[in-house]
Amino acid sequence: MKIAVYGQKFVKKNIPYLNQLIGYVSNYSIEIYIEKSFFNVLSSFEEFRNLNFPVFSHYKELTKDFSLMFTFGGDGTILSAITLIRDSGIPIVGVNTGNLGFLATFNKDVFIKKIDQIFNRKLHLIPRSLLWLETSIVNHDLFFNFALNEIVIFRKETVSMITIDAYIDNEFLTSYWSDGLIISTPTGSTGYSLSCGGPIITPDNQNFVLTPISPHNLFSRPLIISDHQKVHLKIHSRVKSYSLSLDTRLTSLNKENELYIKKAPFYIYLIQEEKQTYYKTLREKLLWGMDQRN
Image 1: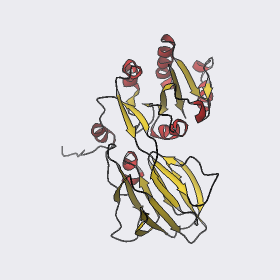
Image 2 (image 1 turned 180 degrees about the vertical axis):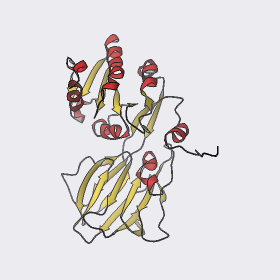
Image 3 (image 1 turned 120 degrees about the horizontal axis):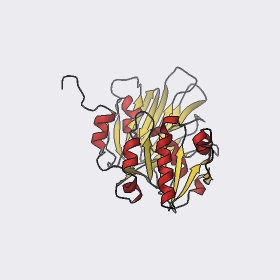
C-alpha cells in the first residue's frame, strides 16, 4: 500500500499526530510519500530532520496505486491538494489542524483513534462534484481549470460594477449588474456563496448555484440550476480585465474572454467518519440553529 501526505503549514503541537501516522505506516510496511514543499516545512523541525521518505511534487507522480492522501491543515489545504489529486480518484483523509474544518472533518484525536478503520476502508467514502472551466480565448497560462468549491468572477481595478450576461444551455438568463458572480457546487454552498446570501445545498444534490455579489437591484437573487446544464458568461467592464478565481487560485482575464462552465468529468472523494454527518457538521461548524434562547 502507498499513501501520500500533504500540508502547507505545520506547528510544533501537531508533531505527535504526524509521528503516530508515521509509526503506524512503518509498523505495517506501508509506503509513505510526502509532498516536496511540505517535506521541506517538516524538515525545519528538529523532530523531523532525519525524515527519509520519498517526495512528490507533480500530479503525474500520484499514480492510481496510491490508496489514500492524508492532508494536515484546514479546508484550504484540501482545496490545494485537489490540484495534485485531480482525476486520480485517490481518497482524501482531511486531518483538521486549522480552524473551521468543514471539509477536513477528522479532529486530530479522532483521527488517531480511527486510524485502523481509515486504512481498512471501514468509513464513509463521500464523492464531491466539481466545476469545469473553459474559455473562449486559448490561455495557456490559465491554471488548473477545475474547482471543488466555486468559480468567482469579480471586478478588477475599478470601483464600478461589472455586467455579466449569463446564458444557461445557450438560453439567455439575465444580465447581472454587480460586483461579481459566484458559481458554486454543493460543497462550496457553505463558503463564499453562503456569505452572499446563497442557499446551503447538501453534497448529494446534483446542482450548482449562481449567486450575485452585491447586485444593484432588488430582484437579483441566487439561482439553483441542474449540474447537467452548462453556463456561458460574457463580461462587460469599464476596464480591460476582470478577476477570476477557482477555489483559492486567483488570476485575471481580458474582458473579451468569455467563460463556459459545466460539471467536471470526475469527482473528488473525501473519507468521513460515520458519526460526522453533514447535518452534524452544519450544527457544529456553522452553528446551525444555535440561539441563546435554546
